[in-house]
Length: 200
Image (cartoon, rainbow, N blue to C red; front, side, top):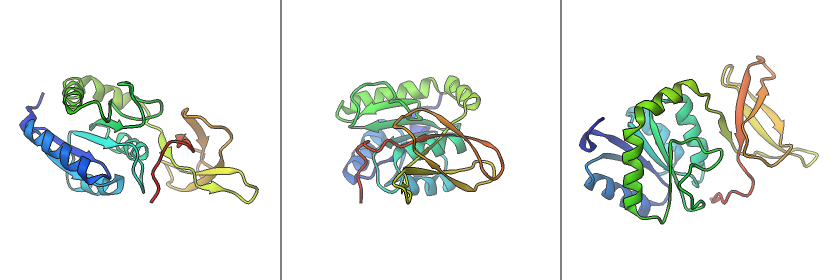
């Protein structure tokens, strides 16, 4: 296991006060910390440097943490992830969230440090699980079609073409669709309509 002083962590949160507080906390605990203001900025950071662990808020504008963590798991399965949000109070990772651990905002920073330490200590076992599992895409709703039916656009992981699918029921289950262009199977989770996402 890496020592904290050599362990790079990326903190992703759209609230600058939270980013700054977490950066100070983690640096004082001996970690090498970078920050990003949203999922898109975090993906740009990952092009330059890969951390060993990401701590990401779930409720962010532009690209939610749900979607960002899904992309991370598919593209960078070697990175450990801790999701955080004030919308859930349990220590368990919420249903449909693709993360190794969860921190409920408001629990206190000692709990966050303990969650990060535990995730680091169990990273070898988690990595082998990441490599065996398929990470579904977390996709937002796109609106309603001409008949008023809600829909999503699934981006095929094989041919990279998008195709529209109706939202039949409200669920946070892993769904599967066959690409209309190349017949590849695509797993995805639809972002719930009432998930407390902040709009900008």
